[in-house]
Image 1: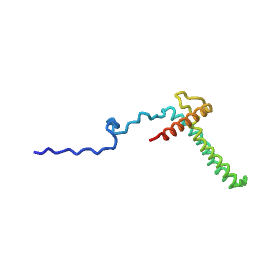
Image 2: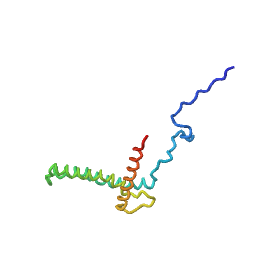
Image 3: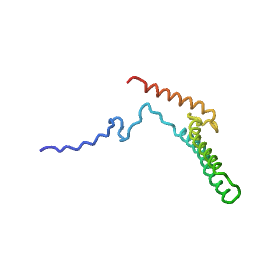
Image 4: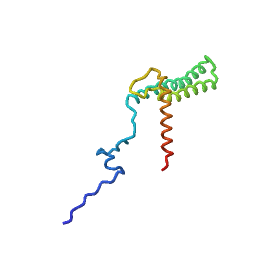
Length: 139
């Protein structure tokens, strides 16, 4: 009597050692993960540095509308556009400030984080240099 063969599971494209029995890909040995405390610190700074100017940028339209509609002051449309645009631009810059001013170490750093900006920019530059050197290697 012939034995029935069990169907083989489809290959996932990952080596068996890469899934470590969980079905999920294992992290590369050289990959670095941002610690949760650092990520939370960055997120708080980004939320403040982008949220406040963005809220004020939207509020500029509302205040301008109220001033004009109630005949309190005739605000030129270009002024409303310039103020709100400047505040939105400040919000975009807040993204970079939030990431670069946060301490990338376990220690929290100062309230504004101004001393961290130079250090973090030099880290980013060093990382970019290392990536460029790695991609120029003969292959």
